Amino acid sequence: MAAENTITLGMSAAISGTSANLGRELYTGSKSYFDKVNSVGGVNGNQINIILIDDAYNPETTVKNVISLHEENIDVFFGFVGTPTVTRALPLIKHYNKLLAFPFTGAESVRTAPYNHYVLNLRGSYFEETEELVSLFFNKGFKKISVFYQSDAYGRNGWQGVKNALKKRNLNITSEASYNRGAS
Picture 1 (cartoon, rainbow, N blue to C red):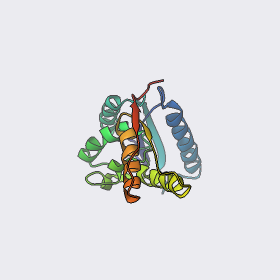
Picture 2: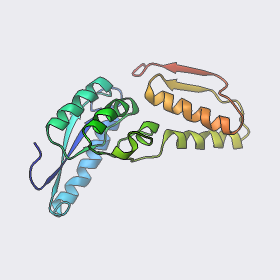
Picture 3: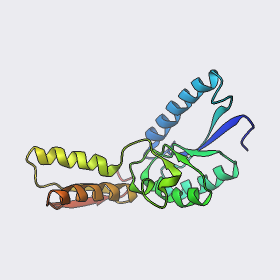
């Protein structure tokens, strides 16, 4: 349970599994900074505490973690890693009427209704990133672009971003292929 004079952040992230490096690094960097803030008195006298639960980049586990973190009375959901996991968590976060601060994803679902009011974004969107990539290729004379994407919410967001960027240039995806999340 959240303590008085503490801001408790609930983090579900990949600490094991295929995206473990992202989850561990986001947690370690965030914790390091919050420790620094706490060492000089915190935020208006409140210490920042992170409760971290491993979801192994598995959306079903993330849903269970969101419920568990909510039951811990966290103040804010924080730093979730990955589009498939964040996408599955959003309906519960909205249901609990909580904020998700700085998820590590470029997904459109965190930027559009009905969830955009519950999310503070850390990074640009996949649509923005793929627009820049397609623009770079197009300006170098490449007109045939193929897409190899992960077959889940993450991959579909990137695929849609490329499709949108090409459409602006009256082009279509030349060919495409996908792979399953976690495949090696």
